[in-house]
Image (cartoon, rainbow, N blue to C red; front, side):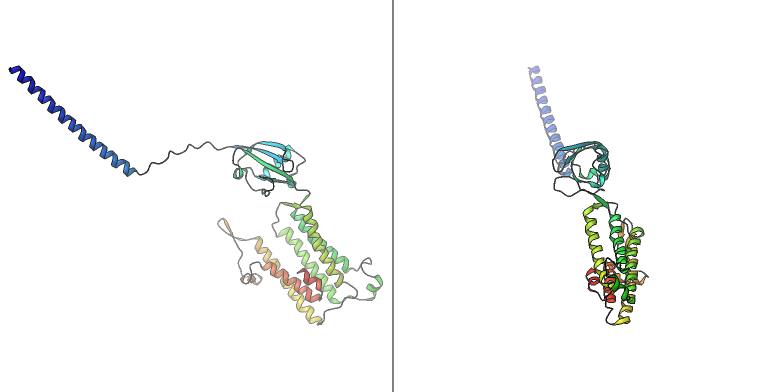
Length: 326
């Protein structure tokens, strides 16, 4: 009997201990869950796992197609990231000698704009394979050649009319009529104008190293040479009539012409050497030179002085073609 009561007591103790242990575990779990909930809420929204970046392409493969036939011309391999369109043209010329770099125009798509020589391949590449369309731009000439031809022609053409060669004017009429002093002055001013152009092209202006189609050279020369012939024909004609107001009109106009030519030169020198602040080039501003004070009135005084030169030349010679040139 005593043993039976003892076993019942021990069973009750075990039951009580198990209940207390269960309560303690539940309380501990609730505390852990509450702590974990606070930790998750304080951490904010879940962030996506960052994508693994693939290694950058070190070389490109460039496929060049004919823009007209869409047929493949060649494939240039192992083109590095810093390579430019100019470098691609050079490699293209080595692979296909008949395609000269100055005559090739490269496009990303047919009918699209031609890519500039300074554009890098990395900036236009969507993958390791780049497809470009090549177009033959025809005969090309450098910009320096264009400007020298534009300005040398008028200088020589005017002198031919000034000399009154027999194939232009009647020899007897030319010998009978003496030239008015304004004719000599006009020849001097015209030569000054185009000699300045030539010297500035060679030593002042920073002419682009690029090329332009031959037709642009022909059109520019036709304009400059044609207007020069028109002006020179009337001023150097044996029947030329001097200005109506005589020496006063000639003198004032000649002085104004020389002032405008000097102003044009100084402005061109300033524009070719802009002020630099850091990496940016600042637009020129007026300085101690009085010819630069025109910047207070206009943005591009060189054009203002250019127009002033031709207006002065027109008033000095009293001829209509000179005014139309301005």
